Structure formats: structure tokens, C-alpha cells
Image (cartoon, rainbow, N blue to C red; front, side):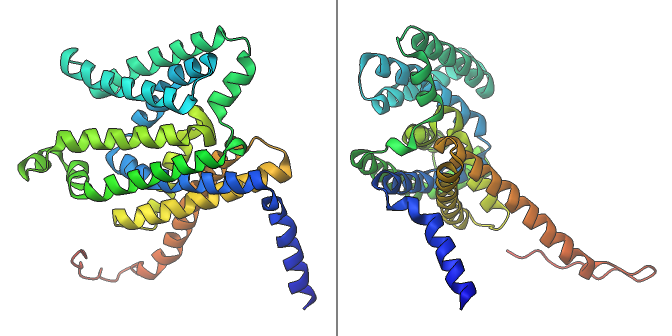
Length: 303
């Protein structure tokens, strides 16, 4: 009984910060971001588009910086900037005859440099740069939660509607074309989903750390799932755990909230890999073949 009482007291003390309104909003808003990033991040990992996510996170910097300097909504500025970069990548591929990663690399550096130039001309460089690069999840307002809920709903809906096309695209674009699933449209939808996730996640973790929340939960979920929908659900759940853990660490250890959330997500990915590796190591001796014994007959792979 004493142990249970002590455990309950410790848990209550640990979760006490969430009695504050701004931390409740941070948890709700961060959880919505985690759901969106869990869905979109699963496609990003499967498709191998991590570099695009990183580039778009930096590609929105000029729009966010300009909106900050002019006193306009930063989410709108970031969205416009990210969309311009997405269109620029496509234009360089078609007209400049450059490869996909080369086009991303050129625009990535260009947009990042432009953003830094804009920020450097503002009167509060340090404050603006910190907010832009690392986010401010503790400043999420009720209106931001509504926008994040809408963004998460759109992301889930688009992913569900385009599921077959995105699966075919992830396997082979030629297969998607033969099946009449319009791989170019599927690719555009996927880029749009990544843009939506990056822009929506900006306030929570900033442009530098958004890729961690986009990729880490999906990577962690990949060790335990074989189907994309299951991976999305687990990635969203792990993302919410990362938000909760990051906020608690930030409160009790006095660390930056956005960076703590991103670090918690990366930690979960590492822990997931370690647990999977240990579990596989424990199972492997059961299938070991004794010296001199004949190996068992090969089994047909399961579907």
C-alpha cells in the first residue's frame, strides 16, 4: 500500500505541470502535429524522401522571416515559401534537366541563405532566429490548435484517398503508371503532404527540428510493423509520447521545449531499434543449427 501511495504521489508530481493552461495547449497542439507527422512521415520514410523534408523545412525560412519582419502571420508566410520551393524543384527538374536531389540541394541552400539575409536585417535578430529555427510550442494558442486540427484532418484524408497510388509509387513509379494510378499526381500529393506537415509543425519544433518529429516516430514504428496503416498508427502514438516526454523534460530540467520534443522522438527511435535488435538476438539461438546437424527445410515466405 505504501509503495502504491508513493508511486501515485510521484506520478502526480510529475504530471502536475499539465494543470497549467499553456502546457495543456502545448500537449494538444503537439499531439496533433505528431498525428500529422506520423501519417506523412511514414510515406516519407517508405519513399526515401527525407532530404525533401529537410529542404522544405529550410525552404520555408524566407517566408517565415519576411512575415516576422512585416508583422504578418508566420504560418502563411512559411506556407507560401514552402509551396514556392516545391514548385521550383519541379521546374528545375523539367526545364533545367537536373536530378531530383540536385534540384533540392540548390534550392535548399538558396532559400536558407535568403532567409538568413532577411533575418539579419531585422531589429531583433537573436529572438526571431531562435523562434524560427527552434519553434515555440509553449506559445500555441487556441486558434493554432484549430489550424493544426484542420491540417491533421486534411493530411489523414489525403493519405487515405491516395493510399493505393502512394503505395504503387513507393514500390515503382512504372508499376503505378501501368496500373493507371497517375504517379505524377501521386508524387505531387506526397510533396503537398510533406509541405503541409512541415508548415504545420513549424511552431511546435521550428524549421531545424521538424524533420526529427517527421522521421523519428516513423522510423521507430517501422521496427514493429509490416503494413503502412499500422506504421502510421504506431508512429502517431510514438509521436504523442515524444511530445509528452519532451514537455515533461523541458519543464523539470529547464530545457528548450521544441528541442526536447525532437530529442525525445530521436531517443524513441534509438530505443526502438535497440529493443528490436535485442529481441531478434534472443530469438536467434532457437533457430541455430547444431554442429554436424542438417539444416531444416526452407519455409515459404508468409504474405
